[in-house]
Image (cartoon, rainbow, N blue to C red; front, side, top):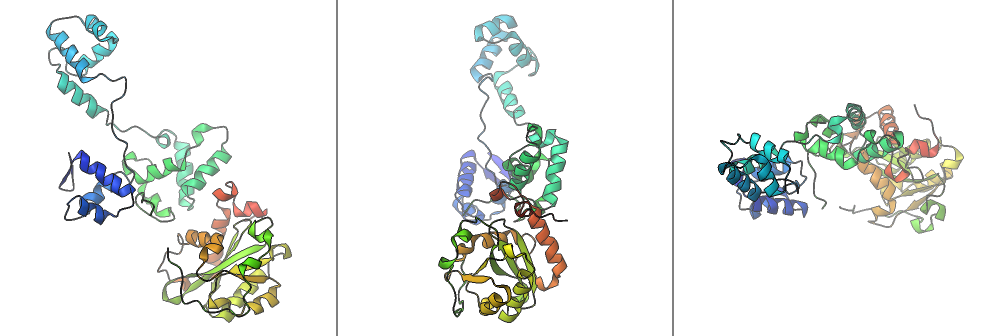
Length: 383
């Protein structure tokens, strides 16, 4: 059994705890299933390993078994030499000699005590890849501080150091180094730079907007050019309003081909205000990057005709309650929550600040782009 937070957990209970956690149950439900009156004990078990179920412990195949240790103990008691004991066991004399020496010598050796000692010594922490390589550890910490995701860091390292395996690692290694703090490799403060800022691995477990107004003369997304659907050429955009506290909003625009992002400060979600801001920003783009815009059914685009007249860019609208039809923009809005958590008053951000945040996104490598950045995909040189 293990003593955790004034609660005893047997091996069976811990196994059940982790199975329930991996199936997606919350801490409170797990605590109830295990007959615990509060969830703190369950949480401490999960947090100790960062929400990542530890591997089941087992002895190494080449380790001495208990019955072999019993034979060593009997051999010592009978006064047999080490070489004979080793020969009878089919082991090397040096293996038997080390076993006796590390467990008190011939006068004190006991098989059961030696077996427990070997099991306890096997718990010593094993240094991970990051612990051995300071330059790699520094690179990873630097990119985490820039809000790069572990997957982006791992992909970038493979491209940056293609022939140096010591400077490469998987994204899972980075997550484990962050979540399992007993590794002592990456500082806990770096977890705050993860997109979700979570403190441990969560089991994988969505609401749609309602009350959307009718858009007059809306052109369906089904009429959008095929080149926009297959992302063959740049210039097709998806847009939305990112909502904040106190009825504040930011307009987000994402180019489908490259995932290049633009953030627009809008004083309100009034259609005239939003359309004017969009037309102003889109109008500054080269003609080859002004092909189409896809939006949802929000009333902020009720004046879409004015936008098309000002920019010569046709607006296409998703079906009601179908945000997945603007998947690129929805994904980007999720990325932006790293900078604008829910409940943030978005009116506090200037356009210059929004530009700096967009610059960070556009310089970050994206897995879907083969770990190129959106700026690289468009062939842009950003500061």
